[in-house]
Length: 156
Image (cartoon, helix red, strand yellow):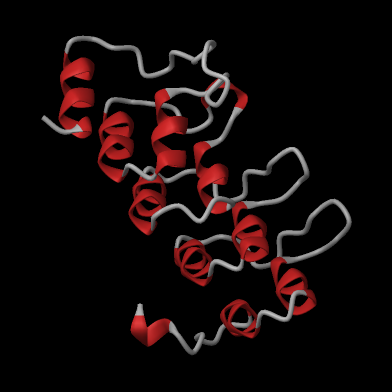
C-alpha cells in the first residue's frame, strides 16, 4: 500500500485534514497538505484536496510554498486545480508569480500565467514579476512575462 492509499484510507476513516503538527522540528505548524506539498507527493495532495483540505490552513499557504520551492509540477497542477487565490500574498507581499519568478522556475511561471495570475501585481515596493526577471537576467522568464514563449517550452 502506497502513501496515497494510506492517506485515502485514513481520510475514509474520518481523519481530520486540518490537524496541525506540533511535535516535529521540521513540520511544526504544518498540516498534512503542507507536508505533502513540500515533499512533492502529488497523489497525497490530490487526496487531501478532494477530502476538503484547506490550502491556507494553519496560517500557512501550501500554494505559495509550492511556488517558492520548485516542487514537482504535478503538485503545483493539483493545487491549481483546486482554484486557489492566485493573488494571495506571503508575509513579504509576494504573489505566487513573484515567488516562482524569484526561483527562476519557468514551468511554474507558465502554469501560473495560464491559471490567470496577474502580471501586473506588485510587491510592497512596486516590483512586478517582470521587474524581478529582468533584474535577475532571466531572459526566458522575461519572454514569458512579456507574453512570448521561452526557448525551452517546446521541450517541456
